[in-house]
Image (cartoon, helix red, strand yellow):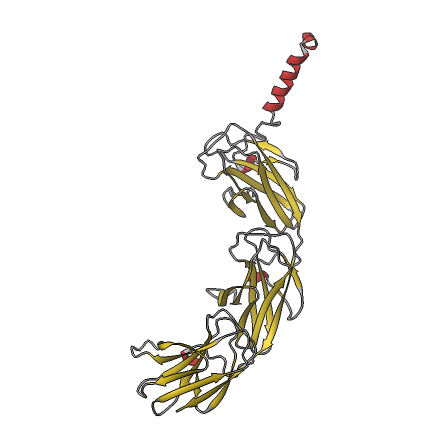
Length: 384
């Protein structure tokens, strides 16, 4: 045949053209793959070329994952016209579930937690479906085996019970990961979640809640997000939940950090007294033993004096905080709320009680509500 007498340079050109047409370096692997049924099978850790060469083009791929861990989707040499995003689904051939994503559209690169081995389908698009390019770019799927012993625990239903004063290890990975735990106490008091060896990428916070999966609102938050170490008051015995996360859910780290939860028995005999309804009655002369704990704690006392005069308050032995006191009165509009009278006064302080017609209260706080101390301290109360 004459073919074998062709110029070697011409043969090289024909080979390169065939490679391009079949999806080599610069080709678009697997077209047509615009639907989940047409997903092109690729291997983990083997880069491939793809194109988004039409507006609205959506390319599907599928990959086999060996078990619990994390699917990573990466891209490089992306044309400047494009901002590729990906989404992940599991295909059910018996029903159309092309838009039922386990992972919604996310800018590449991204990682996603998976709990089981199996075939996972990934769709890739331009982020607004309004750009295209004739130039190919490289995509790769990788797998990281699970390294966090508590996973999966992204919901309170999956929370595992932990014990006080034991050290644990966890990771915030991938972006958006939140780790739920639960604990049980037989007495009222306070808990503090603290961490160490935390990577610079993360700024850890915690939140505390009650959980009842049969309630209309299963998660009932009683202590909102706060930077670790973060404490919460536990008013009675029972089972409680908390979770740890990155503060803006925009960072991740594969490195495990160490954390623990501590319990402190109730040290303030007047607690709970952070609302008008549970304020304790104050008499004089008297000595109060109070604690400003946890951060943001307010201690409220109702005054019970039969004549006008000056309330004198002196304190000693406090640490880490700067206690302040404020006079307040029950509002006269029927809202059953406290209205502040005058300004906050750092202890020692003298507060003038102007009349006996209204219900008066005093409130203790840390001066900026930014410090706490579990150590109680005495406040000497006198009234003249």
